[in-house]
Image (cartoon, rainbow, N blue to C red; front, side):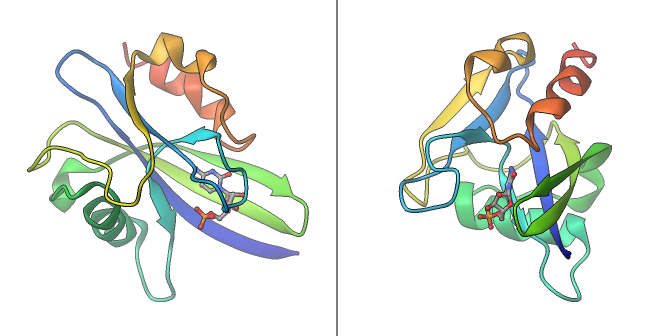
Length: 132
Ligand code: C5P
């Protein structure tokens, strides 16, 4: 089975809210909410992926020491197995904004269940609630 590596990041603001993004129309799992991030390209470390993706998707600059690994998701989708480390980041430069047309929302971790997420992302929620 194909293994897909995706890096994801929980950006936490000073109020303890986490940023989620809605997968746009036309993509697999469209309409579901996810933690920002993306596929780890060959030769990349997940931290490098996140620095690249957070800049592309949200226009923010993240310094590598600000990315702290929290946990990872592992989920068998039809046709591939997803392995997804989740990082936490509390400091970045710039204001996150939608650069790819995706809706963004700042949500308290204990309200994340109000937003339908891909099955790989859902088990990550308790880890974020535990940070509160
Ligand atoms: O974002 P992208 O479409 O490149 O991700 C590849 C696949 O990984 C998605 O089709 C989806 O099945 C899965 N994924 C996920 N949770 C995320 C990001 C991606 O389950 N936060």
